[in-house]
Image (tube, rainbow, N blue to C red; front, side):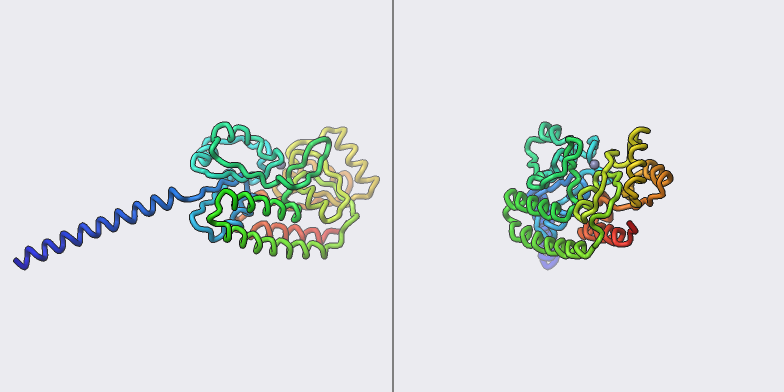
Length: 295
Ligand SMILES: [Zn+2]
């Protein structure tokens, strides 16, 4: 009799354990189904979104072009990129035409909402082309942050408080960074820039920069162009050439050799250590570099 009771009790316990495990599995699946899945286009937008969503419930942030070290403009989508759109609720992009594949995404994944971070940002136009590389201007970056936060709150109101608080915290950090930049005293100096992604930063610090369109230093300048830039450097006694740290420095080297100007590697922030404070780190490194230049 006693043995029978023990057996029955063990049986009931076993059933209970199975039920608890099943319930937990179902709950986990439900949580995963309820997750708000955010996909960002590339690194600057990814870092911004990590800040906005920090500590938010039921949110997953992933970066589409996660292995890209250069610029997303002229980027070709691969099958692994496309797969990431299958489960995404929203795609956050820079905008201003930098992501040239957006039409394809709208066609293939009509249910994915698209946020354009650059919606309210004024842009520089050079040779009738919009310079879409806006994020290295801290003011622009703050406008992008506001736009993305506002749109995320609309699409996912349950996290309104978290998103808004995070945006305020991040804005304060960015304003501090801006104050540090305001101590820089290099305006009115002249420089040559061979990477259009650096143009907004150089404009912000007041440099009189001539930006040469080089597709991020990937294209070689024609002999005629090269000659006219060399002449300009000599005539205006320009001592500084800016490129990005990931650029090929072929054109810059030629210019430096011909004129004695010096090459400086700034960071346009298109890749990094995946930390949410990485934009601040990169911009502080740029600031240190700019402080120590002899114009
Ligand atoms: Zn670009």
